[in-house]
Every structure is written in C-alpha cells, then in structure tokens.
Image 1 (spheres, rainbow over the protein chains, first blue to last red):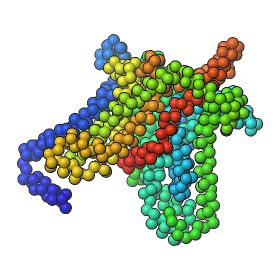
Image 2: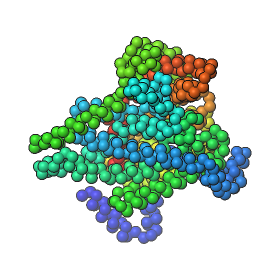
Image 3: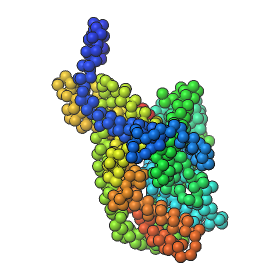
Image 4: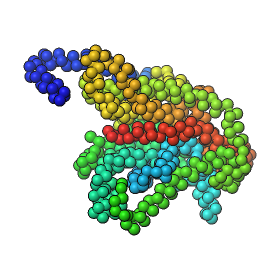
Length: 323
Length: 303
C-alpha cells in the first residue's frame, strides 16, 4: 500500500519535472545520502590503492623496470619479456604442470562434495549426521603450513605412518615427497581430505530448498530413493553445480600455489613447478621484476579469458551463468 | 522426509550403503586427526617406528614441554595474536560500512562501486606489482604489510551486503529518516546493533584467515622476531622435515647424521606444535560451526 502511494507520488513528480529539475533531484539524491559515501570510502580507497594500484604497475611487464627510475619512467621494451617466456625451455613444462594439477584437482575434487552432500541429505538429522559433518568440516580450518607439515610427516620415508602402512601390507612404498610422479596425487588427495566436507555446505543449502511435497508425491508414486535423488535432488542443485564449475574452470591456471610452494623441493620440481611458484621464484627471489610480472600477467589474462569463455558456453547450453 | 509408505527393500539397502559411505568418509577424515593427537603425547620411538598407530603409546608430554620452552614459538604466537586482532578489526571497519552502503537501494553509485570491487575478483595486478606497491608505501617489514593488502575481501562484502538487504527493513530506514535521524546515526545506533550475527561471521572468517596465513609474511617480513606463528611452523614442520629426512636420506655421511639428529628433535615437538597452533581454532570451532555455515549459506544465495 505504502509503496504504491510513494510510487504514484514519484511518477507525478517525474512527469512535471523539467530536465533541469531532474539534474537537481539527482544531486539531491546524492547529497541526501552523502554519509553513505563516507561509509564506503575506506573500501573504495582500499580497492583503489591495493588492487587498482598494482594494475597500474602491470605496465612494467612491457618495460625494463629500473628501481631507480620507478614504474612510470622505466624504458619500454614492448613484448620482449613475453617472447622470452614463450620461447623458454620451461614454458611448456610450467603450462603442463599447472594444467594437469588443476584438471586433476577438478576431476577428483569437484564431484566429491556433491556426492557427500547428497549422502548427507538422505539421512535424518541426528547425532551421526552431526558428528560426520563436524568432523569432515574441521580440516578446512587447518592452515596450509600445518597441512604441508602433516603431509611431509605422514609421508616421511623413514617414519611416516602412511609409508609404514604400505610396508605392512607387504609393498615397498614409493618416495612420495621426492618422486615427481607422486607430487600431483599427493597434492590433490590432501586437498580432497581438507576441503570435501566444507564444500558440501553450499550444496546442502541448495538441497534444503527442495520442496518436501515433491518427495512425498514421488514416494506415493512408488519412486525409489535412488530415483528421487536422480530426478529431484540433482536437478535442484544443477544451477549451483554450474556456477561453481564455471568459477573452477575460470581459475584453472590459478592453482593453490601456497601449498605447492611448501611441498616443492629440488627433486620433485619437474612436476611441481607451476606458473605462480615460478613467478614467486624469478620475481621475488631472483629479482627479475619485469619478466615475472609479464609471466603473471599472461596467467591472469588467460584466466580472465577462460572465465569469460566458460561462462559464454554455460549461457548458451544452459540457463545458468555468472552474468 | 516423512516415510509415508514403508520403505522398499532396495531403498533400505540403498540407505545402508549410504551410511557405510558416510562412515568411511568419517574414518578417512578422522584418522589423521586422531593420529596427530595420539602422536603428540606418545614416545617418539614408538611413533617413528610405527608401533604407535592409533592410541597413544609410552605416554610422555615432552613434546609439549619442548614447545613451551621454545622461544620462537611463543614469539610467533604473540605476533599472530596481535596481527589477527588488529587485522580483523581493520577488516571489519572496511567491510561492514561498505556492505551497508551497498545494501541501500537509494545509494547513488552503488552499481559503480560494486563493479569496481567485483573486477578485482577476476583480474589482479599480480604478485610483483603488489609487492612493489607495498614496498613503495614503506610497509615492508612492518605489521601493516600483512594487514592492509588484504583489508577487505569482495566475497565477504557481498555476504554482508546480502545480510543487510534481507534483515534491515526499508521501513526502518524510512522511519528513521522521517524522525530526522542521519545516515551515520542510523548506521551506528540501529544497523550495527541489529547486525551482531553478521559481524560475528565476518570476524570469524577474517580471523581464521589471519591466523592461518603465511604467504604475506614470507614475502614482506624479513625480521624473524616479527614472524607470525605460521612462519615459525613452516621452519619446524616443513623445512626441517624436507631437509631432515626427505633429502637427507639421499646424502650420506656426517651431514646426514647431523640432519637426522635435527630431525629427531623436530620429531619430538612437531605433533605437539601442530596441536598447540591449531587448538585455538579447533577448540572454538564446534561452538561456532553454526555461524560459519550461516556465512557460507548467505554467500551462496547471491553467489
């Protein structure tokens, strides 16, 4: 009622207003809420300085950055750094490692939270469900450093419990920490252990939106549990799955490199070096600012393009997309 | 779901398998956690030989004793508490007011601000330009290098904004305005008191992030006395283990002996240090789980 009234008042006001009045009300709308600009000012400054500031600094990817002359006055070199990167012998190794780790993670890690959430959804709320949820969520809060510590401790060739278990079963254990062939599996499976439980929350939220009447009707019609999951629950969470899949594919060149950096050692480097660890090493440790900025820029541009492309595909093939 | 009709045989088998599946998931996640707790109070001899595999054996608290005697762990702990408290305060001061402003439909320019924030989610300047900026601002080797570059997260702003949009009725704001209440007063006296749940969720998200982060410290701090706990842990848990047994096994002679000795002393305290460093979070987590889950769910509505 009230809303309607205010609407008609507005419409009447608008029809009478000349262009000048319109501008006048525009400024009035701004000045009436001037304090809101005060509230958003800290966030605005933060993003301007710490996110758009570095974007201004990206230009050193096309320059030879000389610390004495600063970002703006360093000489331009065009695409030299990019060409050097594309022609380097490690270029394809980096791309391959980054892509395989991401895809491996996506293929193994993406479906598991969905399966677990569907399983949670089948059982009644009780102590068992609560216990499993609390326990499986917990590893989410373990820091990357502790996680890496747990991995190297459990897989230590002389004392690790997992190595010991493999030996008890009568096999000889591979050198998980130093064998390049095992690095990716170690990285992906530890990630599964840490984040599968937490990943169910978003699907459980989506599943809670299922209308119980649908299930009741299906039960009356004699649909089995399996059938109801397949025809009611899964279609309900498809939008959530699509959105998360888009986001995941969009960040495919941005693997969780903090963990990789911790687990990396000279022996497994051939399969553990990804673009981000390479940027860290050449940029901050070897102080090749311009070159590593170029490599990082290549990475973010590919990511942004992938995200747009995947979103486009999703929009064409289904009605769910980010924008 | 009310079982109106008696479940069929196949449904019961399905349900049973479902329970088995969940039980396996439970064991897989729980086992490493139990092992770490047991190992932290067991004699390293049993732990290292694999004789201790589930329940504590040869109970000793020497690991914890070593942790409490370790000066750098204490220092790291104190630093982390400082960084977490100050950092979370800064996060809240930036996030909550911005989220409230963005939740107001009569806020001219909200689309612009929202777009400006969202772009940073998908495109960033990258590691090196950010490093150069922090360096130019003179923040390197100060606490602010760990706090200011992450003063807000777009995701959390969106979560808080969604909360304000759904819990602060528009009528409340209109009534306040009619009574001559300014926006700042409205925010401070009415919105904030109504927003305890979202402030708690935000404080938790940001707080855990600060507690667990190491990378910014690795990049920006070079003074060891300023290291947060995670950097100290990195030295104890990862670097020593890597050199002590990973690569030490490949070398031989005296160097390897020395390395093994160092690894032994690290072995004694590494489980205890995992517990001590993770305890503050794990101890409060079951009580706050509700809030964490709420936070993720609010986010998923708009996400």
